[in-house]
Image (cartoon, rainbow, N blue to C red; front, side):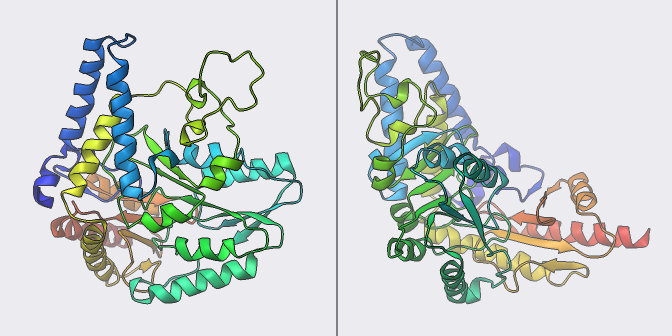
Length: 403
């Protein structure tokens, strides 16, 4: 299926220029139909009958195997979650921290993860240090320089008692890609051997992830952004160390090896694989929807091939935006991903710009902290959409200046 046909199968992309893949991607009609068909199958078999369990088991195993293939890890290291936040937090809160331990968080993490770490630090009397990566403004042409800078910053900010490093694979605000494999190797050589938690919300089905999945301790992602899947379904890849050392924190029947005998004093009631972080009843039909989207993406090329297409489009948009008066781009050259962030100078409110663009059916978003505008391009983005965004921004800024 060509990208054009792929796009034609997404009702959400018709009659609009859409640049919010980093917030939520559109759902292909085939994926929606797969979800509906799965609902119908479950109801036909009976939602709680002996006939339905083999179907549900097959759906779970098939989807987990497909995700494990994309991550290039054993399926036993995968746990299903509802979203990235739960994928990060459920194993994080069960790790063995002790009073005085240090958490090193980058200054480009999502507020949900930051808030969870701050609450964890409050409850366990931990300290928090900040890794300043937001000021790195190199584009794709200086990727190696960016990697060296990140490693140097970690070396400068990591402490003897640092037990956790939190760093997204692809920064949701700047669009920078972080060298997760190199960072993991660095941390394994550190005296305290900190855990590495990676928010992969922006990297899954956007950039190659196999090495990062293999080397991170917690690598959490969702299906509803760059994977074109349904909201409400994500997964987390867990290291063997986390599976051995982290205890379940929100517990349900899925966490248990067996439901019978729960009143007996059993010191090891939980699964030893990723299921120890799964909780209870979840929405099975979403699995069929996500699988369909993932298989459609596979037909569009390898991770590298898709990223190259994305970068070619983001480079075009970056260059066009760089020519517009009163727009200041976050990166100083075309980005290494499909995320392009920028600020508006002068009297132009970011919210007003987004509102004006929306009235023209062109959709980008405002980032709250820092106060930037963000546009995301994907393999379903085309040059006409890029032109519409550029024209819309020019019109919005000129209208504001003339008032």
